[in-house]
Length: 78
Image (spheres, rainbow, N blue to C red):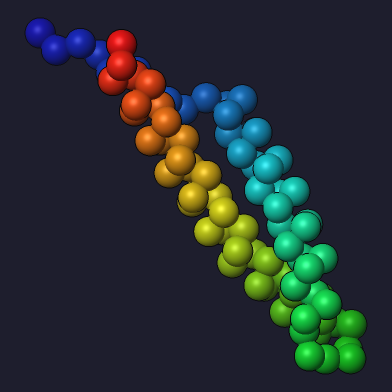
């Protein structure tokens, strides 16, 4: 009989990941918004937010891939 696999999902880890991604979004939004070539504040916020959203999505994926590899290596040592 096969052993049941351990699930790596936890609500606490999800909240931590969301908080880190939100903090990353705020930081990147502040950086990117100064590079938008416009004088209209609405356009600056729009394009800054869209760019920060894309970068935050990549950050979310990279963070989850790093955690997956870490959990796999940790579990394979046991």
